[in-house]
Length: 306
Image 1 (tube, rainbow, N blue to C red):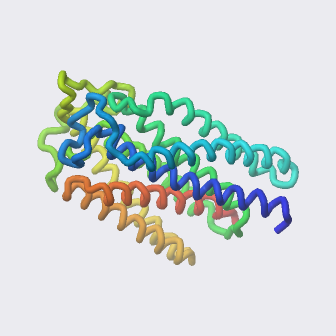
Image 2: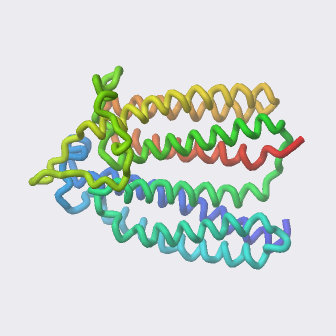
Image 3: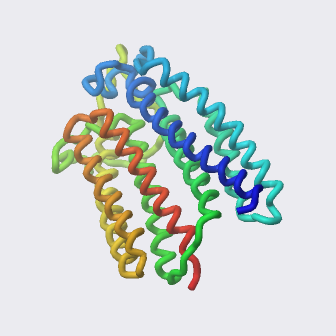
């Protein structure tokens, strides 16, 4: 690898690791502080939105702030280097530019991060962070070999990636709207379909918090929770089938990795609700979702025409 490529690739990998840390710290802060506003988690999950001081340790806030600031500089450096190298590596500049754009977007969104009443804020942070992680991984993939596959398999992988993004978005809405514990039974919520509406999926719909700050999940939260459940079933079936297809196409390692990560993700989701959202399981659920995303981004890029 040439010196210029080595420097660029090293910076990309460093920024990728930094972004992974930021995502985990953001999730921890949202789940224990800005989103819940109570130290006794999960006993008051979503109940107190009256603006209490975040209970997470100060070192988490400080580390997140330093990492996010460093991320801004490294994203700018990556974009600058990609522009200089655009003739020898033209495919690097578009994702690098998109990375810089998302960095600016999240920096602006940070002004409203502590607004737990608006689900769009938490959802924007989640999707923006995962988008940056995927773009950095895509830049890394420019330095790994690609393998041949049929156009049919490539289309199936692209569809799987799209379904996963939809599922992650629904999961983000469930978390941002405090809907995770709105349906705790194995069969879900009885009668939820009767009061379901498209307005329940509007992330800009401000959560109505009565006087005193006690937020009680209602019909909209039940709709989001059940939509996430049914979507999870659909995505699980499709990606499990896709994993089997990859194994049949002599991509055994990728197929088995996809199925294993998918199974772990479903088990974590069920366990998190069954045990009333222990922080460790919820964070691991978020991390596994990001891992699934990277698996499909890798497959989507590395599968080329035969």
